Amino acid sequence: MNVLEEIIHLLPMISDYHAPDSQLYTTLGRMARAEVERRFSVPDYKAHDFKPFGNVVFPYHKLGAVDSLDLLNLDELIILSFYWVNRKRYKRVVDIGANIGPHSIILSKCGFAVQAYEPDPKHYEILQQNLKLNNCANVQVINAAVSDKPGEAEFIRVVGNTTGSHLAGSKANPYGELDKFSVKLEAIGPIIDEADLIKLDAEGHEKEILLATKREHWLETDALVEIENKDNAALIYKHFEAMKINLFSQKNCWRRVSNLEGMPNSYREGTLFISNKTKIPWEMN
Image (cartoon, rainbow, N blue to C red):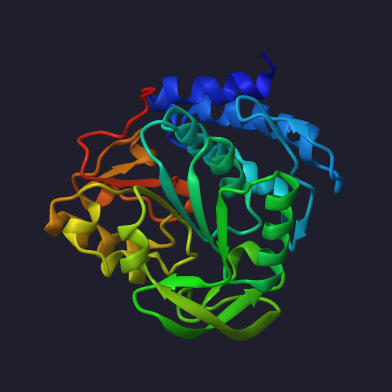
């Protein structure tokens, strides 16, 4: 068993140490980064060993100030390990904000039926290529953003960091060179009805998406969500508290969120898990 595989298998067993401010998190993050760089730091089309998921093709791409290696940092590996231990618990997964495909590829390797939504045409093109390189026949790709209702909206591509591109109004004061164009919107309601797990990284638009959901949407569906800021965190907390749907925060080692202070306020504080379950399932099903 290689180092990266050991980390993937270890992560579900040490969920009490997933908080980004823990020393173990820092150490594992440094180790994982070295292993990811060793495999995926060149723009080739070679398959690399990424057990337990199998061989993965993930060519290097520069995405402004960040790159494709940043899409496989420890927070992302924690989520990928969650997919692995829950590959028999869930069947239909929606990847909202699929970017260039790291989650969709691994979800496919785990055997899920996947719907992947990505509004940026440049990312969408690379996403399709990456899925083809990995023979991900069980992934349906949609070139659209997800919102509270269908339609069209202005999309802002942050040229200096395309991973931070977003629907207009989702972020305050976007910086640097910006490209603006219209994208298609799909409503969250019909999407969530067809999923039992959602991964949501909407770059600030998570508030509009989640506040459009009702309690019945969450009775048999879970979500892993990145929260953009404090304002979004407060509104999302209030919404789910009123619906009596549980929230679990990585920054508190996946304990249930009992007050606003327990909510993540940015990507630096890790992921939020939304569920009607009484705890986040880290045990193999």
